[in-house]
Image 1 (cartoon, rainbow over the protein chains, first blue to last red):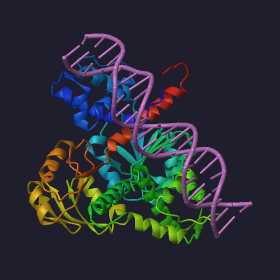
Image 2: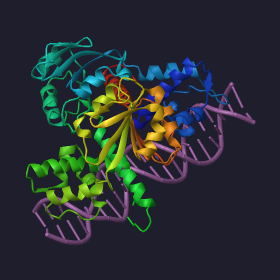
Image 3: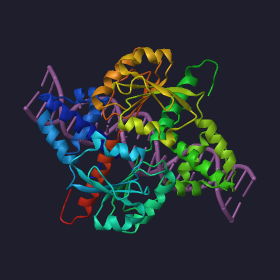
Image 4: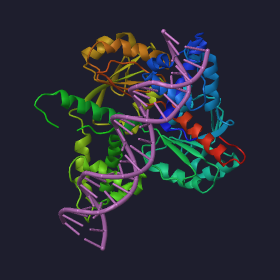
Amino acid sequence: MRIAEPTVERLVLYARLLKRLQEEGVDVISSQEIGDELGLKASQVRKDLSYFGEIGKRGVGYSVPRLCEHLQAILSPPRVWRIAMVGVGRLGGALLGYGPLQNEKFKMVALFDVDPAKVGRTFRGAPCFHVDRIADVVAELAIEVLILTVPAEAAQSVVDRIASSSFVKGILNFAPAPIVVPKEILVYNVDISVELEKLLFYLKQRESQSAPFVLE
Amino acid sequence: MRIAEPTVERLVLYARLLKRLQEEGVDVISSQEIGDELGLKASQVRKDLSYFGEIGKRGVGYSVPRLCEHLQAILSPPRVWRIAMVGVGRLGGALLGYGPLQNEKFKMVALFDVDPAKVGRTFRGAPCFHVDRIADVVAELAIEVLILTVPAEAAQSVVDRIASSSFVKGILNFAPAPIVVPKEILVYNVDISVELEKLLFYLKQRESQSAPFVLE
DNA sequence: TCTTGTGAAAACGTTCACAGCA
DNA sequence: TGCTGTGAACGTTTTCACAAGA
């Protein structure tokens, strides 16, 4: 069955929350309580969880350890993904050491950059290659996922260089630019300035709504 | 009229694209061409643009300078927002210098951290205060928007300290934690590890689909 | 003829409301 | 009685299909 993207997003949040609750020694939790914690309707929580079988107990709620394990299983990868980061600038560098991204689900096996000062060095255990060598290195090291933290102008050229080989299956794109990829490659965009623009747009809207004598 | 969030997101992408096209000296563009560039259906592009009046020419397309100006006007804020960043760690530091966030739509007027080595200093023109002083400083400097780049555990406590005063109207939350805010405050979450988890989830799904003899 | 603008239809996601079970 | 699981209703967003205009 196909699981909708908003559902997957919430599943990650449930998994995080349940892990915390388990550490706190909570035994049982209701869909209502989960919803309160995460700002969701109880019915939403129940529907999301029901896609993966009956896991709660009617009249009682969800066993925290059981639901936690269940969610881990749903979100656990089939194996450890081999991933690489392209662009070890300010943002890339920050993400390399970013706690929430230190994860047992993948192994950072290579870095790529154009800066001669970085190429040849090793950062947090991952060797840095020149981007010009990306096609070869991706094949040699069997890299499956790329984290793209290059400037907008460079994003598409990186994609083009790895698109022909069928090693890369997914890209997490931080570049503020849309990238065109073959449909075999799955792309998620994290576009920081788009999020900020959206926030400012709706703040503007709210402001003009509350302002008197302005019709829009 | 209320504009749907997915529409606003695409408007930002249109604005970016049109700006580039204008610099390249392109004169006219069709909804089909815009769609091809951004991976959207032409009908989607037309519907989005039509919410703000008839801007194209039938049989011809959209005038690039005209559409560009139109989009700027839609997305332009009523004034320069006064914003602050809470948490000048690895990620916060990277965002401070991040090109796409150097923006004439807002001014970074303050930073907050708990690290004594940072408090009292100035980074990129913005003075850094101790987080304990946030309630006062937000009021003094009339800060309207916060960028939250603190650890997950600290996010809610920051919010609680500024929630009572009605200065802060929006928060861009990078902490991998849900935050509870009064409904007057608008929150956008940028949760990097959630995006990566979603990518890995769907990669897993694709893999198990193509694998033979596995029914799921 | 070509491309926009737009109602209507379809697809998608959320919420409701209640049956079913502890 | 209380809370889950779920079909049906609802609301939202996307896509279609075509009339209207350059």
